[in-house]
Amino acid sequence: MKTIHYLFGIMLALMLSLVSCDSGPSLQKYFVEKSESQDFLAFDLGTSIIKGDKFDLSQKETKALDAVKKLNILIFKSGNENDQLYTTEAKNVKGLLKTGGYDELMRFGSGKSGGSISMLGENDDIDEFVIYLHQNGDSFGLIRVLGDDMTPGDIFTVVQLIQKSGIDIAQLQPALDAMNVNNNSEG
Image (tube, rainbow, N blue to C red; front, side, top):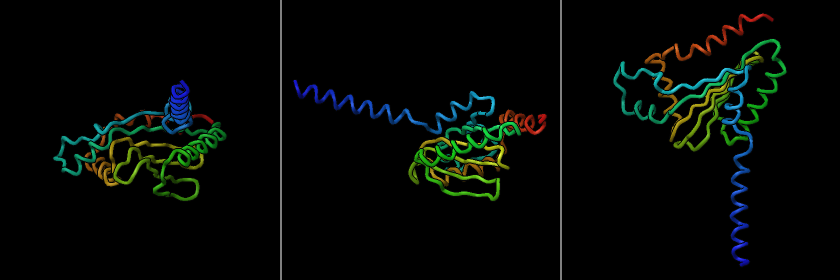
């Protein structure tokens, strides 16, 4: 009987540790939470925005498109009344990137504008790339590139394909509209 209680206790402890690991803050939870906020603009893009039917894809290009599944985009809307909120949210994002298991690949920019690229996974088995961009201390954006077994080369290839093929700008219109609204807002 003691053995059954002991095994039950071990199973219960394992289940609680699995639940507690998942209950902490994460970038994914941040995206979901902030997509409901009026201070943010959120949308997803699939690799279907790349018009591959216009040209023949190489084996390398096909592999890259198969590895990248979608892009989650989250943009903090800038505005003078949001200075404190910007500071808080930017700090939250930086904290999530530092504590979320992401490896920073590079930083770029100078002064108040710039960004970083981080990844989650191993060199040839990357599940997520995160591009964090900030500008003038009042706006920022996050792009989560999600996929299976991605490599840095796959991301580079997809970027080249986007440039080569063009994208359906209509799919980006919500972001463009939000940026224009904010730039033309009273304040």
